[in-house]
Length: 549
Image 1: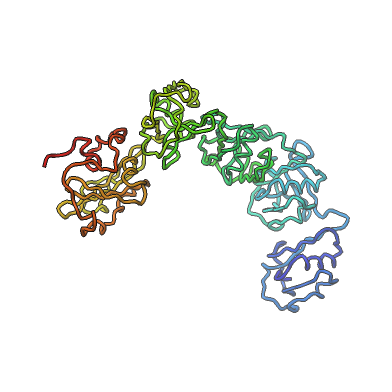
Image 2: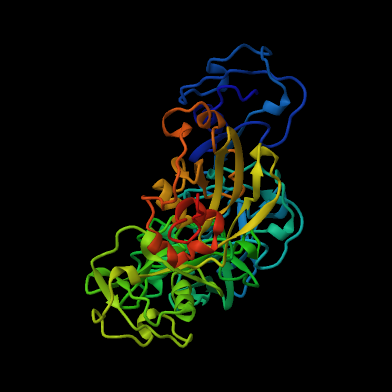
């Protein structure tokens, strides 16, 4: 019989004809029980389900079909008084646990762990008379079986009375070997699951490890998100408000078993074991994918870097008494900056202290002054400092930090007629972006490509990406554009926009003056005068670079 139009109504008629009146019949297709041979007698069978014979249903006509035997139909029926499938648990320490084995065609065989999780385990346990919680285990947890692998890709809701009413690939159809034999623990509960965070810089972060059946193991980062992280933090009694999942073994690679993969929590669970997940011990990961978790800080005064274009740079702000405030740079050094970078999750051996003038408008309060750290502290407010709110500072002394020790790579050439011919590259420092500048002198346009301070670019352009500013210096018209991705500065300026004398583009200026849009005094904080090219463009008078006519 061909499987076109084949469903549970046709299966019901077949099972009733054979005297199997128990349970819910299941229709299967695509040669589920193997391909037959000989004639295909029926196709496009359509029943109501109450017929006494399949021949009483509508169909294309005996022998009329457009099928081959790869489309042979099948059914799974259920007896009223007996279980049609025998199962057993093998290799466990007691009757409630072990490798799942099925008796079919007079042979015992195993089940593959693909898609196998606690829902499938619950059905197997129910078939054995255990109605409590159940745990599915993979990777031949209770040893490898032998003989056929009868089931693969088993998918249940967990409410079925028999595994045969779940979907699966077909009896004997699998792409597994016995290293993937599935196991179950019936009436297991979740009381034997403990967790910990390992190798973090502070107690509220680290690589997530799970203690299961006496062995610590890790969790794969596949699908692991903020909702899952909140469940972990709740288990540990830590704040969940700004919980974060950290992927890619950021807290180092673990060892041993990877217990969980594809964890999917709703957020209401009290234990990660209650979340949906792949069968315990079954995964397609290695330890480079060990997930970490960062829970809400238990420190009274959390910190942040504000106003930067990346999370690892900006003005240092501390939260105290319900509001954010800044930190004065008196006494603040690289040791204190390292503590800040570690506490926000961007550890750096060589953080940079910067002027805060390029990071937007600060909050009104200056919370800390006279901060001095010895390097062993885990939070800035553990360091020695003046009483909160007591200071003699103004906001031009606010601390700003760059936690990364170096910046991006940029093209680096000077005086080219065509910027596309520049192939030399340079590693920028922290706080620098890529710049392309066009100089027009005596009717000829030349280009310079290099790294430039982000603060200079921000002050010139308003922001790093996509805006243009025209500055006029010492008889040349200068057009500058900046960008903040690697090697992005070879084609920023539209050449047509700097020819033809339109507006300010075609005029030059005489005399020597600082760019009115720049605060050259503030730029002393990044040593603007040491960068001669930038100083000539933006602050020639301030830096003493003017030449007599």
